Image 1 (tube, protein in one colour):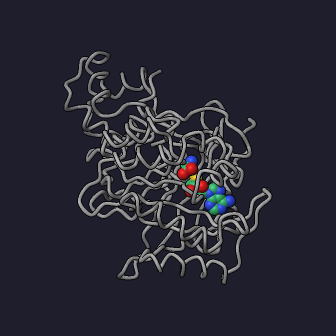
Image 2 (cartoon, helix red, strand yellow; image 1 turned 90 degrees about the vertical axis):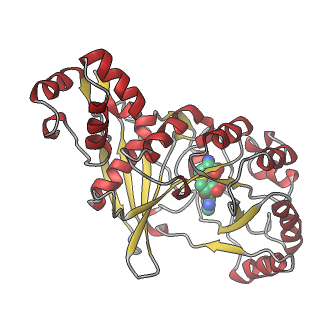
Length: 350
Ligand code: SAH
């Protein structure tokens, strides 16, 4: 059985031609059924001939993940625990926000690996180990789950607006499948997201950054979290194997469109990286690249860290202002259901 969720449109065209002798335009119809009309089986594909549907059903499948649990936070944030065919489990989160006209729009936080090999010391996923990479179909099918839950099937008026790869895993340690998933997410006959609305967040993998830049299919965010190499080594030792200077050099080579920036995420950990002196040091780093800054206040997990006090966060921001650098302090949602950044920790056993 071939899982059609594993194909981008070009591969699907190739497959239906070689396996079913169908013309390539059929691929577009089937692709739209799969990714836009959220078809879970072939029987509903009414503009495909009955005999083709029957042959598809014999040779192919649409392997949607199972939903194990859904948890809803007071603030509307909704976390899904998904299971794939081998029992591997992963979490994905839908986050609501209001647009300027007061309508609810959603952002989905996607996972890219089952667990994570980077073992950052402050991150629950990192602390719980690595199982395996996700396939492109598994990555993209999280969005099918999100869209179905939100009943979001009008591509001209989507309410699921933004995608962020800030769930479980290090996307650029799974770069091949990630980039293929991005082609499905961005395909106008697929999930039809604009690359501006898809953000890949990485702790900084040099080769992956270059590949992502070439693909031009998303916006880039870097988990920096430290103003210098020494503190980076202390809190994210595996990521810091790429020296900060080399990471910054790779970012300077990253192709940016007009007015586009690279977002730096900086997680504030009490007495580790939250002093005003460190803010001054950080400002220089962010300035050396066309960067903007998001501050994240640490969300508690089992690790040894604590969040800084609000006064301390403000003092950090003020130090940044003196460099004419403004930073958004990112509000965490879904803390009551452990759905905030760094708190995803699916149980991996079958
Ligand atoms: N591996 C990728 C994406 C996953 S994490 C990356 O490193 O960017 C998404 C963001 O949440 C990262 O910036 C990560 O460092 C941050 N994060 C991890 N643990 C956190 C915690 N306990 N509190 C707040 N943010 C955390």
